[in-house]
Length: 235
Image (cartoon, rainbow, N blue to C red):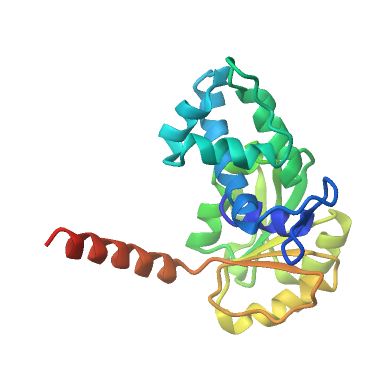
């Protein structure tokens, strides 16, 4: 899942030094940042019932060279066998461990509007080891609204107690940006170490808190740029 995986990469791997939790081997940020993509494609292969795959087959799916895939995975021990390729389940499990996804991580969403509800109902939550534990909003009209698997919207006056009682590690913010910093400070005081930020507000938080900001407009502008570049190259 975009963003949540990046939060756990930041928490398990020191980008400044390039040192991973596997030891003192230095690994580039580019390699580390590709791990969520490998994990996503391997998940798709598992859903298809695929038991093994070669680097050449995987390269065609991912549009990454087979050589690049082998180099990336060799940083973490390789995982493949010559003449056999990669066992899909084994490789997926190993990458999950690298990303910290071999354990469950509790998540709360603050903001029960359209974006918040869409995230709550995203199917990849469970597969990626993230457990949606609660959803909050300031609007009394939304209290009790069931959004997913029996989870109902709660009001913000219950927030602090809920975060502490349920060992919440990550909070997704899908609220107006004017409220973002205040709410972010509230949750970090309760021990939350990861913020998935959809508010378009830059959050100045303690260094031990990881923030992954999702700017939908930035993504759209990148799309326009790529479209324009393609048009220019075809003239």
